[in-house]
Image 1 (cartoon, rainbow, N blue to C red):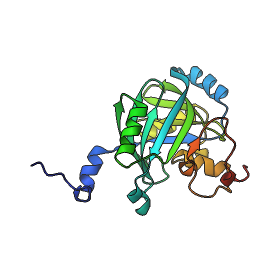
Image 2 (cartoon, helix red, strand yellow):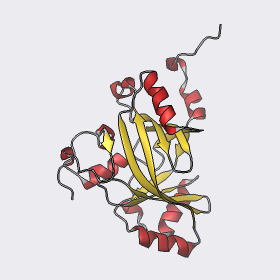
Image 3 (cartoon, rainbow, N blue to C red):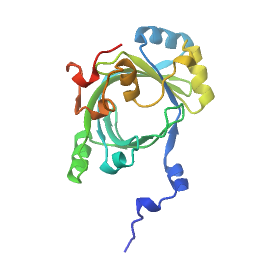
Image 4 (cartoon, rainbow, N blue to C red):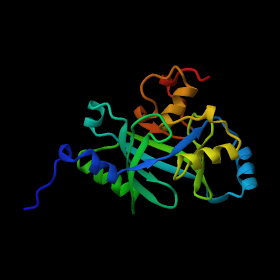
Length: 215
């Protein structure tokens, strides 16, 4: 019989070959129209127009027990559906790691995880527009109850920093980590971890009481 390897026996070296380090940065509270104008000026191309995206995050109980900032994400991106394991090792330019595959059916994959005892913790809507600037990807993001922001991602730290500067952003304003970090900065009274603890995150819904007053 084929013996299955316990996750506890997987070495950190093996994990590093499976996981991809993301090099990404956020800039919060930005005017998307101004960013679009700048992207056109530098020669970037819009490859995916603004569209509604939906996702669920699954957080196995042992992740919380181990205090890992990690989750399984199923996301309908409008033109494809992805299944991702993502972990934030630190709030830094290279602090996020992920492993991702494309799947065929959002609802079916959600149901499969529920059937094996892994129901989703949160359902979340967002809107995203994607631009390509050479090897750099720039996304314009909208989330419920949150000011609009952008995210810049690329293959190298130098490339991401250069693109940010060319688009007129100061590195002093750079923000790293998940979208929960953006919520916490806008709602300093927010209790808990952020929208990962909200069962439903949808456009048009009232701001949850746990968010408190926004700045």
